Every structure is written in structure tokens, then in C-alpha cells.
Image (tube, rainbow over all chains, first blue to last red; front, side, top):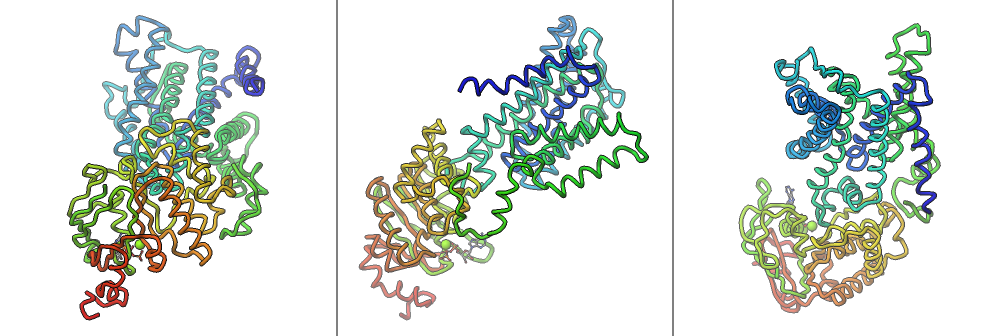
Length: 330
Length: 245
Ligand SMILES: Nc1ncnc2c1ncn2[C@@H]1O[C@H](COP(=O)(O)OP(=O)(O)OP(=O)(O)O)[C@@H](O)[C@H]1O
Ligand SMILES: [Mg+2]
């Protein structure tokens, strides 16, 4: 039992050894993959469990990064503390993401379905505008730099993003079998019935919103401290917001490993196209083409496509339920 | 325990509830009947907090409940089922009920496994044990109606409001459902307010009837008296006020 439980730790330990055994550009590529896994898993905490499609996941990434940078730039005490100061600032960046999620839940969770998606996207655009228009504070389009003493080394950034990705994954896995996870599924399946059964729809969604925002905020902080420079297009980028969505959908939304599979696939295609192929057309065109084909052939994602194929076929045979002879699910 | 006083609800030009008053006492079992569109479901929506009335007062378990959200009213001990069944379709039958065990009370269960055990006992009570591991979408109508009841019971209610738990069932299923409702009422010591179209079955199950017609209470009293009331007969024959019947 305890051995089986410890099994996932083995690949994790191997991955953790990465910076010491792998070539530098692969380590960097993995770091970016971990970032995408974190954001995709966090996105899918709402997308998969609650059916709430957050197109503004990058808002929390940007908030985490900007708050971290502003603290280091504006609070002399933190700047003087060196690495300890960076740590405090990064944690504050994560906390800022969490607190904004608590507050943003009030307006955003009034929205349903497509309106929620649009609302979250509008929030991202609003943040971008705000940062652009407060150049004294945020550096505007010039971005912000922190001094070299605050830089995170590649190794440290790698280990931190790996931890964030693993923690996000663990969070989704634990949720799946938890009390909160049951409430989330119930709310997704039927809000009316959930309320009648005593579930506080708003509170459940708010908690999920915060849980999905916090690791993303910390990831933004780590990313910023690693690159030493942030601006709107990097930490509040439209792509930064949409790729987690694509990763979750390509991999398999609602499945713990779905966003991981999707993120790895996306990153692998990206790296392969950009670095290892001589292309006659621009890489994004091919990239887009591959995504279209994948979503057409596996609409429920790679994982679902691989594991659920026989079941799905059996179900589509009888749309109205006379009882299927299937003895159990779960 | 439940006190409905002069409740009004309009939908545009339709007056769904017109100064409706009724009470349900602890442990009582009351039938609520009336023709289609009489306002029975609307009254349930109001009582359970899903629809805010335009006027009137509503007390449950000693407090005013108008304005409380549905989950808070559930926590006070009022559970309802839906006329159009509302299962969590992708969840297993036992988990559908476990949600009620976990969230139906403020001091409810916190452990998922314990909640599932409690849910299984309730499924036993409504005779659904055999299908507990199936996803809810695999159930037939009669089973879904029972699932509605089990999930409502899981919230530990003192008053159970059943909206047409028996409509759409076959004759054999009807008798079983009557039996189940009686058993639930007896074993769990709760009050039941049940909407039903099948007058024969309600009269068998409920010692007291309330009749709604065009949003108004037209009769309220012991079943034998109510079913002989000319206004009630009139309502069922479709006369506007029943005065001519
Ligand atoms: N959300 C709504 N919007 C507009 N009108 C409504 C709404 N809900 C109910 N009504 C109207 O209110 C009246 C009462 O409806 P209600 O569903 O309460 O009747 P009912 O007694 O439950 O009928 P049935 O026996 O058919 O279930 C009907 O005329 C109905 O059309
Ligand atoms: Mg009705």
C-alpha cells in the first residue's frame, strides 16, 4: 500500500535530477512545460470540475509576477534582504493572486457559461490596459526589471516550477475524491439540485477559484524572478491565457492527467517545429493545423481518446436510457 | 413548523399564487392537490427559496425564511424533490445521495466514506440498493423518483416536500411508492407535504388535504371532508370558481 502510494515519487525524483543530468536547453524546455502544466491544471480545476471556462488564467500569473516585482522595486527592506527578500516577495505575489481571486469571485461568479468565459477574458484585457496605462508604477510597455541579486538560477527555477506543477496535479487528484470535489461535481452537474441538497454554490466555486489561482500566481512570481524582466506581453499575454485552455482540452479536460498530457504535447510540438525542422511555412500555421486535426479526431482529448474509446462507443449506441448491462462505473 | 401566510407570486400577467396560506405541523403528512397550473410547484419553489414571493410571510422552524438562499433553507431542515427529476447524471447513485449527507446540514458529515455509508442506508430505505453503483443517468423514471427522495432525505429534513413523486409510474410502481413514502414518514419521524395528481392515492396516504386552484387555496381540511367539497369537485371538473358545481 505505502509502496504503491510512493510510486509516483520515483519519476518525480528523476525529474528533479534533471538540471544535473540534462542539457541546458532541455532543462529550459522542461521548465516551460512545468509552467504550462501548472496553469493548465489550475485552469482545469474550474474547467473540468465545475464546467467554468476561465479564459483569463494568465491574469493570476501576471498578478503574481507584477506584485513580486513591485515589492522588490518599491520596498527597500525586501530589496536589501537579497534572496530572502525575493522569497517573501514571491509568496506575497502568490497571496495577491489568491486574494484577488477571493474578491473577483463576487462579480465573475454571477456569470454563467459563455458569459463567465467572456468575463474572465475581459478581466485579462482590463489588467493589460491598466498595466499599460500606469507607466510610473508598472513601467508600462517598457516592463520591469529586478536587480541581478534577485535572479533565480535555472536550477532553482526548474525545481520550483516542477514543485508547482506537481502540487497542482496533486491538488486536482486529491480534490477528485474529496468532499469539496463532490460539491464541485454536483454544482457542475445540476446547480438546482445541488442547492436543494444544501450545497452553497457560490462558496464552492469561490474556493475552487482561489485554489486555481494561487499556484498560477506563484508560477508567475517564479517565472519573473527567473527571467529578471516582465512586461505585459510576457506575463499577461493572450497566449499565456489560452494555451492552458488548449492544453487541458487537447489532453483531456476533467481528468487529472489530462492537462499534463496536453501541456507536454503542446510543448513538444512547439519545440520540434521551432528547433528541429526546416519548415517551408511559418511554424504557427502548422501548429494550428495540428491542433485542429487533434481536436477533430479526439474531441474529448488524448487521454479520453485512449482510455474511454470502447465505453464511449457503447454509450452512444443507446442515447435514451434503458439500463445498460454495465455493472458499475466510477 | 411550516407557516405560509398570504403568499403571492406573479409571473408577468399570470398570478401563480394568490394569498396562499397553509401550515404543516411537526410529523404531519399533508397532500397538496390541484389541477395543472394551479401553482403547486411554484409554492414549492417559494417554500424552498428558489423563487422569491411578491408578498406574504413564510416561517419555517421558528424563523422567517423569505430571502434565504435554498441551501440555507435546506440546512434548516426543509428538503424538497423536483417534479422534473434533477439527478447529478454523471455521478453514481450513491454519490448523488452522499452529496446530501455531506452538505445537507451545517453539522453534516465531513468524511466522504462515512457519507457514502449513510447514503447506502438511505438507498436501502427507498429500495435502490441494487443500483447504487450505477451512474444516475442509467436509472429509469421510477428509480429517479426514488433517488430524488433519497437525496432529499440525506439532508436530514424535518419537513419533506415531494413534488409529484408518483406521476409517470406504472400501477405496480405506484403501490410500492405509497409504501415507501409511508415507511419514510414512519421511520424518520418527519413531516411530509406531497403534491400529487392521483387523488385516489393521496386520499389513501394523507389524512389532510389542501387544494389549490388558480393560485388560491380552495379547501384545507380532513381528507374525507375535502374530497366531498363541491368547490374541489368543481376545480377538478374545470369550473373557474367551482360555484356552479
Ligand atoms: N417561471 C415561470 N415563468 C412564468 N410563468 C410561470 C413560471 N412558473 C410557473 N408559471 C406559471 O404559473 C402557473 C402555476 O404553475 P405551477 O408549475 O406552479 O403549476 P402546478 O400546479 O405545479 O402544475 P402541474 O400540475 O402541471 O405541475 C402556471 O400558469 C404556469 O404557467
Ligand atoms: Mg407542478
